[in-house]
Image (cartoon, rainbow, N blue to C red; front, side, top):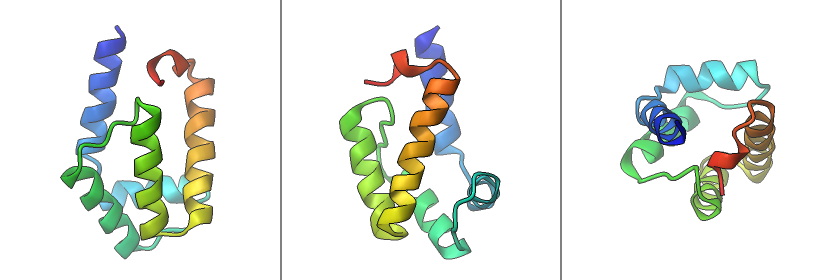
Length: 94
């Protein structure tokens, strides 16, 4: 089951659009503009992002901080950790 969930998450990341990202930003209280959303989507699509490993998340958040700012990256990390816990998925993430 965990491989299935990991594949679903990876697929969603690879198909993420800038419009979806802007929608989620508004839903979760992030400040992103269209340019930043497009850059984030391009980064995710052009790089092998591994949200399941601590190193992969750290690398992704460093890039997010370069695209946006450090506060946004920290807020994203906090939200990501909260979502993992609330959905009981911590066993999937190293």
